[in-house]
Image (cartoon, rainbow, N blue to C red):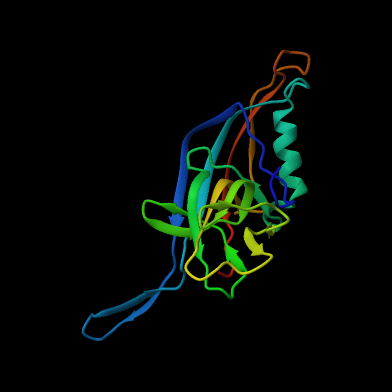
Amino acid sequence: MPVASNPVFPTFFGAALPFTRTPVWRTLGSESLAGVEVLQPAWSYPRYRYKIGLAVLRQAAAYAEIQQILGFYNFVRGRNGVFQYTDSQDSATVADQIFGIGDGLSTTFQLVRTLGGFVEPVFAINAITNLKVAGVAKTNPADYTVSSKGVITFTSPPAVGTSLTWTGTFLWFCRFDQDEYEFDLLVANSLTDSYGPIWSTSLSFTTIKFGV
């Protein structure tokens, strides 16, 4: 089970292509009278915006897919609530990922992952299967604890220069982009048919940033 208590977005048979994942940055800056741009990034890591199609949502009691997604959307109250999402197209597994170097004083460290050479924090931790200090495996809670936002707190500060690594899986904290979405009735089958009425929709949501 994920470390955080936020609900996890359900998976569906009817998830359809195209699947869109958009890295979103914010850039600050100005342009001089001579046309020279002075730009700088406002963020140290991006948000990710997802657009997914749910092409086949079956209503029959054996599947109850339309009921699941409607119930989930209403449970988080549209754009208000935060949920966890598993991106099946992203590498949600890290192996011996370096997340810090001990300085002899600090006890808290944010878990991170590396993607194509870019290091970014991960917050919605699913499971930690191994955590090491200088190559030596540590145990939870005797040696460390993990918060609901992926912060590791050691019971004693790692020694100066020691490498901190973790192996495990993570999800993404997300929020729906809108307070309303349309659900289209594609096939008006009777509830007694095998699949029942069949619906479809397209949803968009964006990952949450935290202050690190």
